[in-house]
Image 1 (spheres, rainbow, N blue to C red):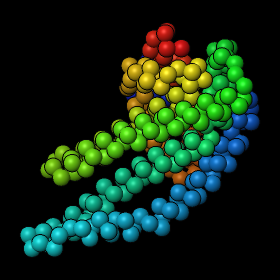
Image 2 (image 1 turned 60 degrees about the vertical axis):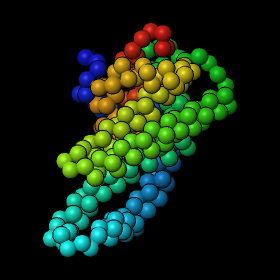
Image 3 (image 1 turned 180 degrees about the vertical axis):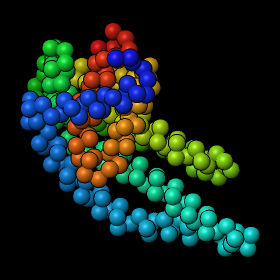
Image 4 (image 1 turned 90 degrees about the vertical axis):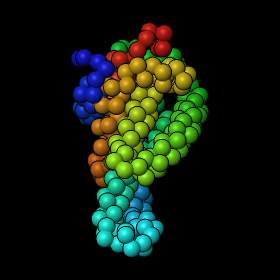
Length: 254
């Protein structure tokens, strides 16, 4: 399989979903799937109840100037479409992030079993307690990365939204950031099992950024779809592990 391209990256999620059906992995999916269902119900209810009010509040901010009155309806429609797209992306993004923090130890175990299945070799041994502490700590490191970089991306998107023509690139910018975040999230379980420093992991993944974007894009799209997103996340753990094993950029990383 050729590496370093969008199509190959996307195929890892599909291959992960196929591998998810094998009996030896089902035991590691029961608890994460139950967690996914609870979070899915909570986030979907929240989005359903407050989305219309949020869009109406943004539209209400449009000034009642005479020269704007003729295009106010068009602006309101544009804002509604952009808000819907951003809301769906954020829904999938938040669903993934919250689930991953809670289910991190289970996903770490799953990544380890997938690596053994694919390579016949296991990461360095450690106690269950040590792994739980390490994976939860790693999730906090990733969360800080997502928040700190996400704030900068949001500021950039906000500025672009006021620039004619450039505003159409706002959804693209946000989607690429979400795709990159998903690639980092799910490829990192394998890297973390080998206790690879997060900075080195990110640098390594950046060398295969097109595979990462292809993989992350399909994860984002899958996580946007209610019910399907419950199963996409464990499949993404497997797919991310496959990507990292197959395309790890330099031998020194793992």
